[in-house]
Image 1: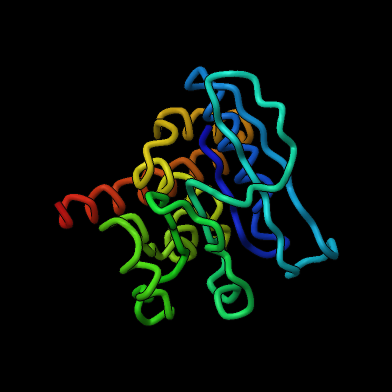
Image 2 (image 1 turned 30 degrees about the vertical axis):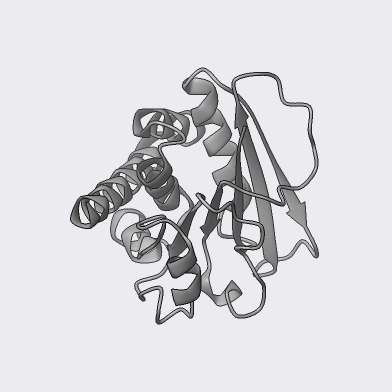
Length: 191
């Protein structure tokens, strides 16, 4: 089973990201589940959502404590909580930031992880470029696809199209593709 944990703040599409990831997994022929965990349900409050992907039915409903993948939609969470707690030794981490891992205080995490498994991408900037709004969720899904291979990019794009129509869907697809390409380029440079 692959378990993904997505951290962000209310209003950033954290719950939608997990839903889209589950839809992409279904598209790839897997069983999947997505569910959120809320504290106070208000704009800007920390939010966590989870996604599980498996080739058999999933019965567990507990929070994901030992994720294979962690996505951080809002880097302001890094100093206030351990978003990477429980990340498996061979796990992947994707942080929405134009800063380096060292600048974010994540050098130690990078050093104890497999090479190229913890990366940053400027997801908010990519979202602004393609959507005109600072919504990093679809962008980071493209990044997750490239970084971990847990779902295919085509499935992510299909899930986005199924959730959002017209120009909004197309813009989110373009943003996800841009992030996918960026991460693939980064992986190529690390090879």
